[in-house]
Length: 419
Ligand code: ADP
Ligand code: ASP
Ligand code: MG
Image (cartoon, rainbow, N blue to C red; front, side, top):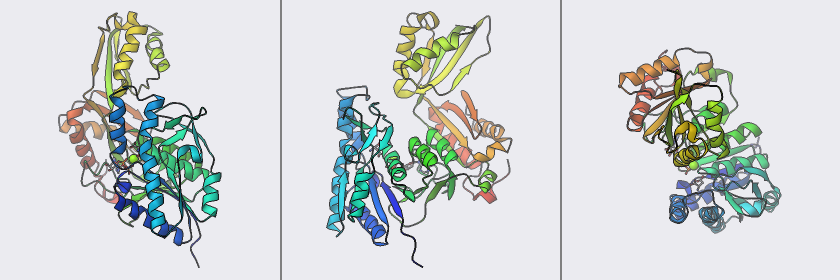
């Protein structure tokens, strides 16, 4: 029996399109998939390093990336890639057509540098596929209701890939990257990290939001919402990678499935706040109004009618957060902001696993492991399937290694020690 014809979306990251030779490799893979009888749409990122180079140019003239013109510049990396990959497919004997975000069209809101996709018109892609063409779509970019070009945030091509797969009702979205799957932690930091065969959307969502940049968070959200199976794999081999799928019953038996590190947060402390109802609301309202997303929050036990409040924000927003507080609530933070302290030299290490729902003792073990290396914990946050600790940045990688080793994540799940 012939294998069923499928509709496959293949997303290639920066390294996979990093040179003409690699683009020819992408072309060959896409064509081989098409020749096996499947319909193929390809989503590509900018060539590796290109988005960073473009952002460096714009940052010399505009510090705030949330600007229409910044997106006009940083979206161009993907335009180069789609054209070159389409040419590579033609040169290899296939038919291809490139599509920019506005040509698909990928409609987004107007939040420049971090836009969200509102809708996708898959018609032009379907027409191209009917003509036997491979549609090559620019990742990372969209167009808002005023016709302005937008970008979807770092790693946004993953989201383009999954959104296109959802719009086309594809059978799978393959994410081709420079590692051959999702690992128990970043394999570039912990060399004995282990490839995970299958992981639930929910766990992948936590891993992505806690620092595992192999998939952009939003891409996992969309995969979960529209039921798109995501297959993370390497463009340099045919080995199966990691499937991100709905939760399966045996997944709960694995207590901890991964550990992550996030280096992009900063810690802010306000001292001597009055211990009264309404103070937290007053403090956080102007931050929310200013679009600052607060992550962890800790309030100390009151002493003499006053208390301290500590919270974390994205490092890029720390300066602005402090300015907002100085301006909007000087009565709480001091006219010169003298009650505010901050620390940029932090990081957040986390352990994630759906099995934590039914197993006790993960937090205890995590704290013991960090203590065994004399790593001081500054903040703790937990949810049903994760525990996060903020520690000094200089100890971040040591913490990651000790947690990975301590939860025996380098071993197959069945051989891991009990807690
Ligand atoms: P691409 O350019 O293909 O989108 P990214 O650099 O965005 O690739 O993502 C791949 C990188 O994610 C890997 O090189 C790896 O360093 C990093 N990474 C972090 N955590 C993990 C993890 N748990 N599993 C696999 N890769 C991870
Ligand atoms: N080129 C964009 C970036 O570097 C999008 C992506 O690669 O996913 O963030
Ligand atoms: Mg990426």
